[in-house]
Length: 222
Image: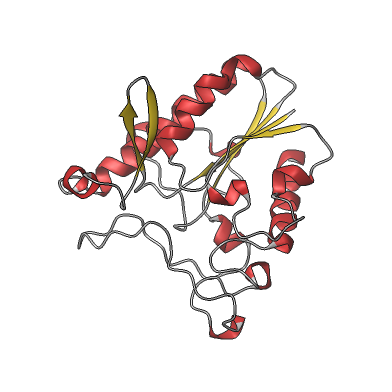
């Protein structure tokens, strides 16, 4: 079984009817827990909610969303908490990149520790932001071999320009790179300017999902 936890990239946002996200393209049974707007702390919660289902023969794919997203509590469940939500800006105003880097590393280590205890195969991959930067306290703890490519985002691996930084010191917060109309020619695009995004605004097209599948297969063979 393949388990996928992620945001819109894992869920296959902007794919046309009949097209499939990368986890569906493997010749294996799968469960895809990805959804649009998902956050990394929410993914940790999802994994621990489903940890009893995962065994040592399974593969777990973790698509890491922009670290600016967080989570809130609704009675006894967690829900996404992001820029558009009431109260988010008041909550985030005193946080800085140190906060987000530390917690992203903590979440990664928590997932790694849980999945290592099961003995399954797993792979992390991040949507944007160049290199996934690990907090100094976790550098000796996180196994970077379990990343598809810790130095390159999926956007970069899909041959597109990636200048995204989730937290910027001028407090100019954005939740992912700003997309462009699917009708803008690739040569005129500033970010998602490769064949793997043609016909979409800011998510991989079907060709892009096939390419992600190939990258995952190559990484797992190593």
